[in-house]
Amino acid sequence: MTSFAKIALAAALVATVGAASAAPTVFSSVGGAPTGVNKWNLDGDMPQGTDLSSVVVTPNAAFVTGGANGIYAAPFLSGDNGVGFGAGGTDQADGADTTRYLTTGSTNANSNAKITINFSADQFYFGLLWGSVDAFNTMEFFNNGLSVGSLNGTNVTPAATGNQGQAGTYYVNIDLAEGFDSVVFKSTNYAFEFDNIAWSANRAVPEPGSLALLGLGLAGLGFARRRRAA
Image (cartoon, rainbow, N blue to C red):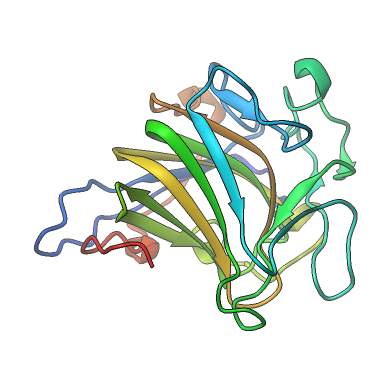
């Protein structure tokens, strides 16, 4: 199965005292990000007129291009997962990503290594081109400093082994029932690489015909008791 295969993964809520959030839906589709959402390919300045307020890159994380052996590798575009992310809303060509992207670095190398994307208002959808997916890559969503959920590479694919080719990159779309105003990206080892982010104040599930259900009940998405951001 290629990395852009039509998949839908619904996560079961881990019920704990004080947790009010519902389970997220994580899915990947051939068309990449849904229509009608905000998009940025991480090149140039942040787009104006949206709720995206800042991208904070801490030591050991960086905006990069190309690759560095053993440190980071460019995501791989295929199966239309670059649709709408080219200059002026055009489509990006298939192949290794030649544009600027983000890499988290490694918390083992620097405990503060992370990337934080902040929004000025609550969002309910987030998408990203997740390159060379690793089990040790993590995303966590926050609202007013409180965690409302997290996931790692194994929630995207069981084969989260850092494949740097077509089979290792997924366009991942995430819907949350509870709003978030920041997303934190970390990786214990090198590295969590991503590009082509998308976001919306509305949930943005693709058309049902574009998805084939593969699995349900992934309780490991880590939706548990809320906690303060570190």
